[in-house]
Amino acid sequence: MSLPEFPVEGGCVCGAVRYRLKASPLAVYNCHCKDCQRSTGGAFQMTMPVRRGDIELIAGKLAAYVVTADSGRQIAQMSCPTCHTRIWNEPQAAIELIMVRAGTLDDMSWAVPVGNVWADRKQPWVTIDPALVNFAGQAPSREPLYAAWSALTAKSR
Image (cartoon, rainbow, N blue to C red; front, side, top):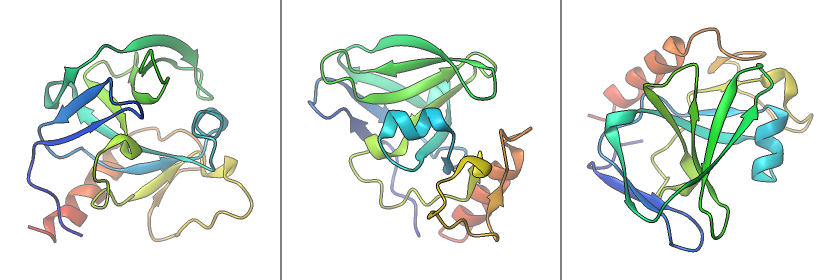
């Protein structure tokens, strides 16, 4: 796995919303909570926490709606108002972060998950690698995920 040269870009299905990621995310991990299963229509969501200053909206506008996550936290979901693709969320408990949906990247081949959260809500047919940084529920701290990402990406430099 090697990191791309930043910046990289991503966007929504219809192309109305585009963003630029100016630096590596702090981590990449899978979330198996029911909200992520519902919103993706799949078994989990790949999430990339990035510093707010490391991402910019370069085309379009985002529509927001607030949900209460499984953890009880309030999270603003940001999506394209035309095609409704969820681009990122803005957790009110961590206003310095933007949680980007890895699948919205133009090329996500480098976005290798280093762990899982809400693993106790995974679908029974999903296999979770026990060597990764895994949490049964909400991670009490993302620091172990950040450290795992740093270790993984240091090997690619």
